[in-house]
Image (cartoon, rainbow, N blue to C red; front, side, top):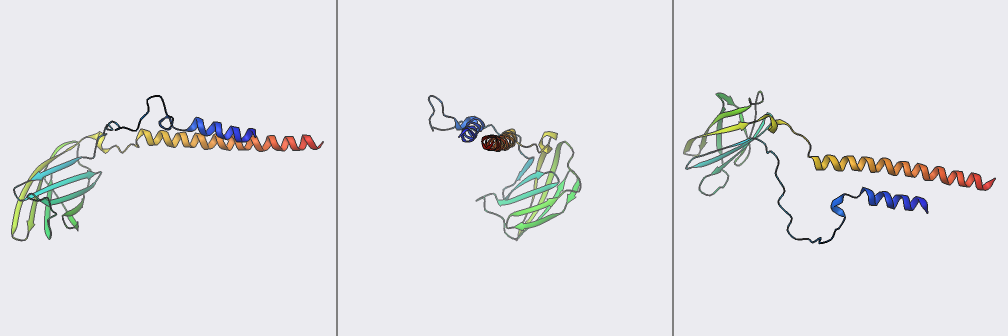
Length: 178
């Protein structure tokens, strides 16, 4: 009986504060969450095309659309130059490309130029990518880290409670038999 009470008490203590209801609690609109720093990106547009690049370390995801209707550009060829260095590009799907940089981009603003050839249309797009050191740090969100720590502490406490309960029940059986 005491072991069950211990487990219920531990479960209630370890529940995250968001689970506990308070006075005036309702399920109305939640406030918008503050967004952390995103991955560095650039956009380059013209009358014909729109190109967006998202940098994740040395990997670059590229998305090429028609400027008029935002549809992916089919059968396109893309050449990319970042800060004076030609970057090899591979087509992944219609309007989607990927590139691997030889080295991470230097911190600061770097010029980006792209040449697009799609059928009979050819265009030169230009933009800039702004890279900061904080954007390269892939720190785990604090909320998730706190939840993992709370889960680990809870698991340890439950294990200790189980060991304590087993020892106590063995001691009671041994002591009761004598």
